[in-house]
Length: 143
Image (cartoon, rainbow, N blue to C red):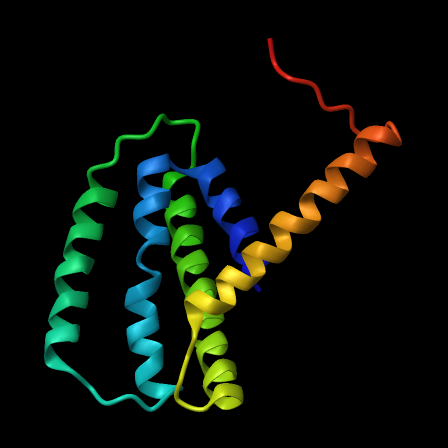
């Protein structure tokens, strides 16, 4: 699901400006809050809701003030950017639900992502070496 979010993000980036894409991508936490009310059954908090409202106003101001060249379809890109934020929010909620189910109430996000990063770091060197020495991808120091 994370790869789908990245794919949709880059598609939105091809349609609208970088500023709009980044701002819309960061709205995922607003969708996390709204979805967590229904899916995770978290209780409503007025201070969080006010944060969502204020952040939404900021997003609207930035996105509506974006001046993009005519050849880009900014409105479609903005819609795709919102879809990307929703996909990421669903992924985040799903991850939280899975981790809470398997680990009880102790959600160890930093430990989980640190472990994933450690595996990626250790295996990526092997992949780079194999692809270099087999000739699939030649790596060299830039000059």
